[in-house]
Image (cartoon, rainbow, N blue to C red; front, side, top):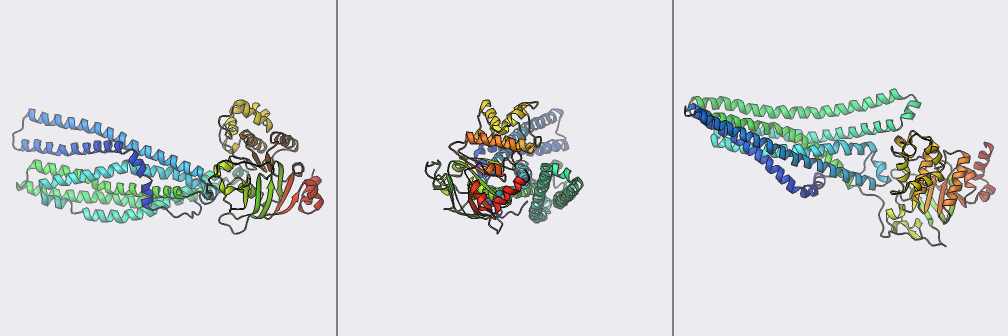
Amino acid sequence: MKGVQEKSATSRQALALLVPIFKRFRLRLLAGFCALLGVDFLQLIVPKILKKGIDSLAERSADAHSLLLLAALILVIAALVALLRFIWRILIIGFSRILEKRLRVQLFAHLVRMDRSFYHRWSPGSLMAHAGNDLAAVQMACGMGMVAAADALVMSTAAIGFMLAIDVRLTLLALLPMPLLALSTWILSKKMHLRFSMVQQQFGRLTEFARNALVSITLVKGYCLEGAQEKKFSELGATYVRNNLRVAVLQGLLHPMAALAGNTGMLLVLYFGGRMVIGSGMSLGSFVAFITYLAMLIWPMMAVGWVANLGQRGLTSLRRIATILREQPSLKDGGITRIHYHPQAPWIRCSDLSFTYPGTDRPALRNIGAAWSTGIYGITGRSGSGKSTLCRLIVRLYPVDRGMLFLGGRDVNQYSVAAVRKEFAYVGEQTALFSDTIYNNISFGRPGATRKQVEEAAKAALIHAHIIGLDKGYEAKVGEQGVKLSGGQRQRIALARALLSNRRILIIDNGLSALDVSTEQEVFANIRRLYQGRLVLLVSHRVNLLARTREIILLERGKIIATGDHAALYAAGGLYTTMVDKQQDHA
């Protein structure tokens, strides 16, 4: 996981996430725990039946009919226990799955609302770990963990009560090891929390590395780095195993300690209770019932370690999830939800716009002043000059101070973020395609678009002919990030998606860079035709495109160093002239 600046959520803040879900399903949980209590109650009756049967045998008052009745009663109880166990599993374990699903949906909805600043701090691998391992740990804690805790509490309390009713001194002897077990569980549980946090963090790193390697598999193979990647993955895996083993050490201590406490109590009861039976201080039936209740008590004692483990895992994971959910977007919504453009006023205006990326000191943009109305405008400059940063600020991927960026004559901070983004279609150099069909990738920009509209957009982007030449046409899948397509084909599909969205402003950030010159010129002509009366910002290094724009701004180290049309900039000399001459020399 990348360096996360957000302070971790407290246990109270984490548990607050569960309160609404528990309230919503309180009747279901009540019914489930009633069934669980019914199971415990029925199990506690069995030793009394055994006591009665054994005492009647010892007193020679039993007959076949009475013993058959007792056996039938035990069978009825067993059948009821089986039925009630089925009911509580459906209700309580089912609830834990519902809780997991609701938290997952809440987490996903939160992630898709977060802005770029958030994703500078959190890597996709760590977020995937939260959506996988962490949610599974919370589900286990709120499912079997909660059941085991309630079951252990009820069974231990009831069993101790019945044992006290039989013999107080023997009960105290049986419970003698319990304080030591409680103290050791408390100490080990605190350490468990810290060690499990390390396990989850390392799992995030492992997931992120695997994701990066698979997404960049062509690069890995191209540089013959399979061995190096395997070695690094193995090292990360070894660290993950070591962290898990440190957790396993504590888990391995909790269970044997609970078993030792329970079996020590059993030895004491067998010795002292056996002497009481021999000395006629206790009936054989009472002794068997006491042993049975003590055996029932051993499970809760052993469950202490397991429940503590599940609880610590669940709470640690819930705190990690709550930490993410506490993060808020750095972009704040304004109250205006509709944007109106004035014919005589600039659609977009930058006024002394400056910006520095989070975690860096060097400004990416400095004192940008520019205005664009309808038409096609060019933005150019060397790599790293701030072209893409300017585009990202315009489409509200990062926050800007008030008075620096205006849309429709108003400060963008006065609008809701959604209102601003609905104005823009964006095509970047690094195209984002889903591992889905071509049709779904294009129509993503306009849900509900007809087949004809999708095809018209593809034709305008000059990709339709290639699509229909594929085996499945528009239903062909493009693979992860469009791996089955060339760079130019990916860019044209992304452009088709943008054109289909039919937004008022189109930003192409080097989104035509992979096209050949003739295709580029034809696509540009289609854009000019479709966007008459609207605004296009074209970021490019190709002067044959820039020459056809209404006006060009030239950026250098985050500042505008020249503004004008192609002829004026070329005549002025300097960087733009050098760019034109070099491209003409290589033509």
